[in-house]
Amino acid sequence: MVSWCNMFIMCLSFVTSAAQEIIETSLTESGYVEIGYISRVHGLQGEICVKPTTDFPELRFCKPGRRWLKHRVSGRDMVQEIELVDGRGHPGQKTWILKFEGIDTVDQAKQLIGSTLLVAKRDRPELDEGEFYTHDLVGMRVIHKETAEVVGTVVSVYDSGANDLLHVQLDSSARTLDGSGKSKEEENGAPDRLIWVPFVEAIVPDIDVQRKEMFITPPKGLLELNLRSDTISKKERRQLVRHTLFTLQLISFPN
Image (cartoon, rainbow, N blue to C red; front, top):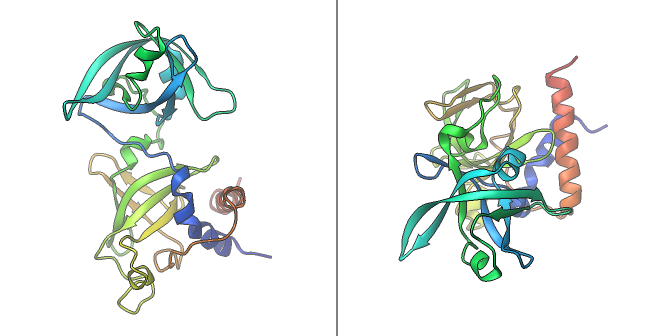
């Protein structure tokens, strides 16, 4: 029988190849929040496809009203208001199909490709206690609760289904992974050291949104784990993540 700890460590080993599956979100200008970016044109009526970076896609993409577009003009970022007329999910795709007022042709829609879609920060829905926006987690300092050591910084969040995984870039002052004074990544020439941290209360018990800090109580071996590539398929990795987090949740929060 494989222990939850062993499976947890296995889960953390798929960092490199899973990078493309991560949805990264970030705060933009102080008054706006990024909710997606326009990837391509859909059909012949001026509709566009948006890849979401929001926790509330139905609210952001189906409810008509004001949105904002950020795009580059002459080397500068410009934000302009635009009216969302209609939106719907794209069957079988991780995208949403949107229709904007005044965008009625393919040529007009093409001008929007590559733009970032925004909403006013003040319009973010209130969350329940213990819930956090992905935008707020990215950029947080990660601190070991017992030692007060700065572990690193959250660079992105991966939605595994039942629970999220925090992608953490280790701080340069953090202890090396192999205890020899040099990490194996440095030996292999890799510039960064990255680990996965399951976003569950048992491991991330305290978060200070105002100070942009979170405190973790990692299982033994997490910070010392050497990052390595894995040969298993993406589907197998996803299944392993879900099973590992489900097992961890049962142990941490029994009924």
